[in-house]
Image 1 (cartoon, helix red, strand yellow):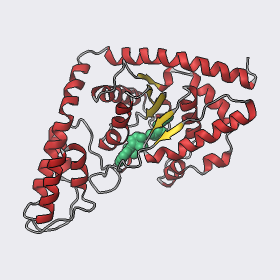
Image 2 (tube, protein in one colour):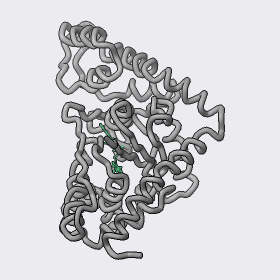
Image 3 (cartoon, rainbow, N blue to C red):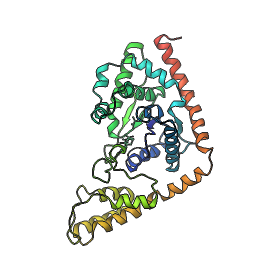
Image 4 (cartoon, protein in one colour):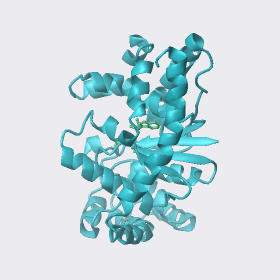
Length: 320
Ligand code: ADP
Ligand code: TRP
């Protein structure tokens, strides 16, 4: 079974990215042949600074490797190192109905937020379909927000197969319906775009400040506190042991403990949860050639598969 997923290097990864995408992907690498990539071509739709993009790619690769992505098991590569993907995206775009892309929420959301309406942003799902179909993927683990893009991929693959015969297998989405959306410090969905993130490898002082700044209601110290929709508890559940969570829930219910105390406990747990990863990251950073070497090896392995698929597609559509 081939498992494939990608993540954009469009900023510094936060707890939402880790618990929503990176951790599930790392767990799945045991279950099949995993292909994970850094979607730098996709990030060009929002990052307009060459140095920053290169830095983001490198940091994201380090983060992923530090958190347990195993390059001996998974093929880990940079999207732009396999140029066949842009050729496939063009071929797919020639049979993608406009209406299919016009209906995509992610495009409509970005327009609503005032981002300029570029063609790249509009055709983003076609490049994503190319990512998935180029590697004959069976399973694509993504967050709930990407579900529609997978439906677009299946529609495009079906259309291609109707016109040219069985060129592609249809990928299955793997969306963890149980996975909660990780809340940000303001109570909304944690997202780079909302300035409410807790980054995975923040400096201790900055991390403390972020966590102490989580928005809470004005319930007095001695009164019981509502567990429903509590950002502190929702984040604590991700990083603390079950008995610690039960204890905090109990203390919310009986009152007598202030939000400040709960936040301190959350801070300690976030810090210790990421501590082993932080140490691993420092080790990896000590070898300046390591990330480049891993990504180069990954690209080579990815291209082996990509060349076979693109050959099959060219033949099917009548190129060369
Ligand atoms: P952002 O919203 O910060 O720009 P992206 O859209 O780049 O994040 O998301 C990258 C991956 O992380 C996606 O698979 C997405 O589903 C997941 N993800 C992002 N934010 C969250 C969140 N708050 N909770 C759960 N998963 C998230
Ligand atoms: N669109 C995805 C996101 O923003 C990233 C991505 C690009 C991706 N290509 C992909 C995810 C292929 C899964 C499969 O999170």
